[in-house]
Image 1 (cartoon, rainbow, N blue to C red):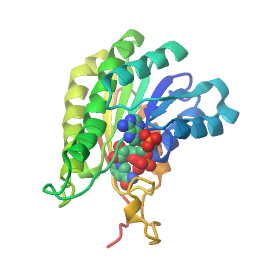
Image 2 (spheres, protein in one colour; image 1 turned 135 degrees about the vertical axis):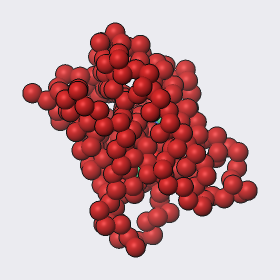
Image 3 (cartoon, rainbow, N blue to C red; image 1 turned 90 degrees about the vertical axis):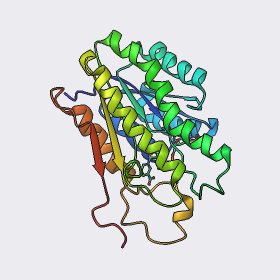
Image 4 (tube, rainbow, N blue to C red; image 1 turned 45 degrees about the horizontal axis):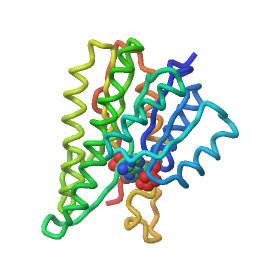
Length: 240
Ligand code: NDP
């Protein structure tokens, strides 16, 4: 039996892209999953499409992870619906790109607050519930942009470099509570994340959301003795 069967999970940003692929993979393996996103229509559409196959094992709620109080309620809702929390996938993220002198403070804040502070809020609230369960798994979806800086990426790079540091520190903090923390760092994935990158050009070289979901599942199914704390996942043959 899968180690995921019967577990209770939250996937932030689960309404599309990588978060949706992770949600599907968890449901296929018997988990109960609560997803969140900022738009009600996105939640309704996704939960509606999954409910036919997974009924009361899937639910969704509007939650902007930048809002600490909403993040707190998100975790409480998972505990209320499923009786506990075993898995937290911090996937919600945005990319605002541009030179520092041109970037608005609002775009800077949105990037840091979604990609970094939102992860802190969700972890802060989830950890006590995982302790009650005797353990859990937190998976943060980082990026290779958390290791490789590039011009125009200052806000995104700062948020994802910060997320690597946060994940590594948290991993050391909670490991003896049997809570495991991993950060998955994908390269380019073919989603709606960077719409400007599409322009009718072939995206066949990019990773698929399902590739990232496969890594998440591998992590969750690994023997608890072993912990890949940082995983780099890149397209095998990126565009030159
Ligand atoms: P998408 O834009 O396709 O999906 C993002 C998801 O996050 C949506 O469900 C969106 O829903 C939700 N979301 C956005 N902001 C918030 C918020 N403040 N609170 C809650 N939910 C939110 O992106 P991807 O699937 O491509 O990206 C997912 C993660 O993977 C991100 O962390 C990203 O940084 C990372 N990543 C992506 C790569 C790529 O090339 N695509 C490469 C490496 C990492 P809604 O808009 O309704 O809020």
